[in-house]
Amino acid sequence: MFSWLRSTSLLTLAAILVTSASAQFPGGPPQGGPPGPPTQLMLLSQKSVQTELKLNATQLKKLNEAWTKEQAATRAQGNLTAEQRAKKIEEQKEASDRTVGETLQNDQKKRLREISLQLGGPKAYSDPQIVKELDLTADQQFQIGAIDEAFRAQMGPPPGAQGGGGKTTTPPSPEAMRKKITELHKSAEEKFVKLLNEEQKKKWKELTGKPFTGDVRLGPPGPPPR
Image (cartoon, rainbow, N blue to C red):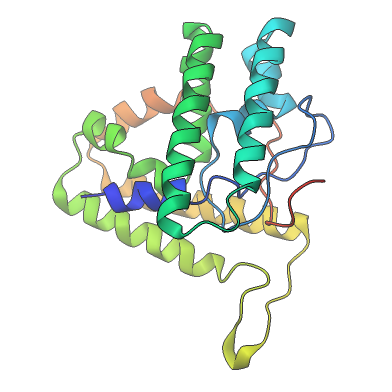
């Protein structure tokens, strides 16, 4: 039921993380496009996540190489159709996920998934694996779709888009956008948790683990790094 939501999520691959001054990956996270859930490599580009997972130098080197490829692949998609772009993003995501799976230890993979679910917003709730693990009903899935639509509507059009009267939207400051996304994510999760029964709430708590308090910068899209 939510396969279309996952596709929408994939189209936002290059979107929401602005460069963290402490990130060890060169070039910073890719930018451009509407907000969406962070990919594994996006999260792993953040110093706070690297520290949380206790990544060693060998792991950082391998992940850095994969991250560079992901950024290059993202920037090369500008002239593709939406269908071609979705296919390329899916292929790159699968390649990146394989690298992450081969590089991280089991406990690191588990914690990375917990962090990803905490920061993923409505798209995380509609992931087919989460739907299965929580045993979400058709009605719950429908309401999650409504939460996602409301989230995207509240985010508004991406900067640079044509608004009413043909006017181009002005990008907000990174901090303003970061604050807005954080507030919307919190609101969306509160609505999501209210949909769950007690058993599902317990399972969701297990899946998300202890709260992640590291600094992961969610921010507005912009031009690709040069």
